Length: 147
Image (tube, rainbow, N blue to C red; front, side, top):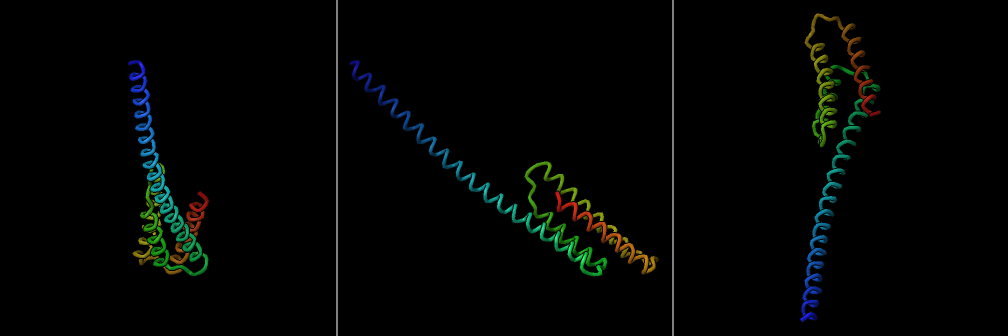
């Protein structure tokens, strides 16, 4: 009888161990799947960030390379704003940064719109304001690139 009881206990322990091992293997597989998904999400996010940096760099080179009109500045800012909107923000600090960038871009665009609507300003003054705005945008983009 003692032998049968010992055999039952050993079998029970073996069954419990096998179930525990199977459960651990299942959880491990699920974790590997979640890790693979997170790596894919990270890769997509890095790709979008690279696109945003490329857009910023392109806008910087455009600002440096040519006489920029208000429409050129506005379209460049609009491209930058769209790229910023595509970025996913997974935490509060990323969301805050995204909103801050959006606000800065909108302020620049509002200044461009104001200059476009103001017919009372002589062309020379308008060109000076455009150059000033161009420098402000360039400085802002350079600061963003260092962050």
